[in-house]
Length: 447
Ligand code: PHE
Image (cartoon, rainbow, N blue to C red; front, side):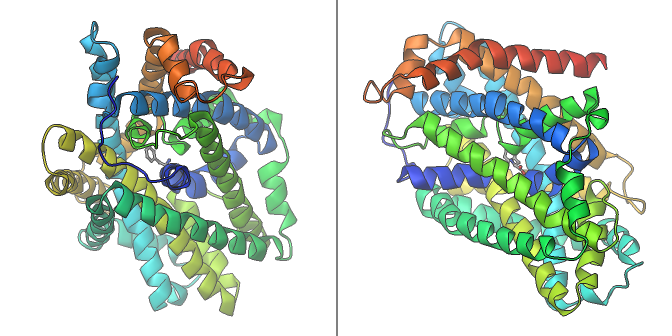
């Protein structure tokens, strides 16, 4: 397979930061903590660890291999590796379509987050009474103009980074933001666990309760593992195509996975102890971040104002590096078809902002259009499309790609040893991951 001289990440560290930036996002900070608590804390965590390291990480490795081997986007990589069966390219195209839909819904939530960051800075949020946050959120999210303005602002930042390029934009921004994000998160954790009554939150998050770990919980764990690692839709194929030639793919995949996992757990540690210490109960979805947490911040007194700013900044930045990867994947696709990077990025941005605006207008009680688009997209991109794409990807990798090609890529053309670890991961990709994904998919459809 040819490797051409297209732009890419300058170093393994930069690549890891960029991919970790894609992985760490709203999924970690917002979604992971509440599903972990909901489905049995420590019990859920056990299943989640298995899915993350034995399925999610396998997919990440596979996507990196496909990407770096071909230096192409998902739309062309599959058929380049398997020219006899060009139909495989539909898997890549389905993945890109999924990325487009995820980006739309992601923008809506990121727009809310940016607005809350702004309201924290200006003090608007602090002036809302503790009983008023639900109404405050509903009023904002279902109003016609303001959410869309924030969506557009957020998207503009995302597009600027993508237009700046892979190394000068994405890599540089990720190398700066990711360490900063960890510092912010650790500060929040320290504040949270040192509050009086924090232990109830720790117990909620970690104490195993196997009665709560239902079949639905197991499905949720898999969906969350895939979503959180940004695997299944081909985004990591695109990032894989930018990996340096001497990058140790399996090692990088492991670092990214470990980083994503710990940031998810730390987010739970930052959120739940504070929620319980302030006498609140955890709720699901938007309620937790936009209605419960503001009450918590208000109850912290003077420092609450700063904590609120830090939290919403953290969430905005985490969402930004994830949105960048989604926009980059789609931009790279048009770019590959001969369109200039700037034009591609702008074209995708313009189309996705329309969908995001429609989704925003269809949200909430006071919604303006009755499409239920938000809920529909949320379901489709949360529960169905990623596992389907992930299953097809791993099937291709394990059964339709040449084993020699895979081992050649994992060993950097023979310069690294093919030890037990690589062989074990190849075994997981061939047997364990496809079977597990198929089981969960069938169970999901039947159930
Ligand atoms: N992994 C991101 C998160 O946890 C979401 C994402 C999914 C980003 C797919 C890119 C591709 O929020």
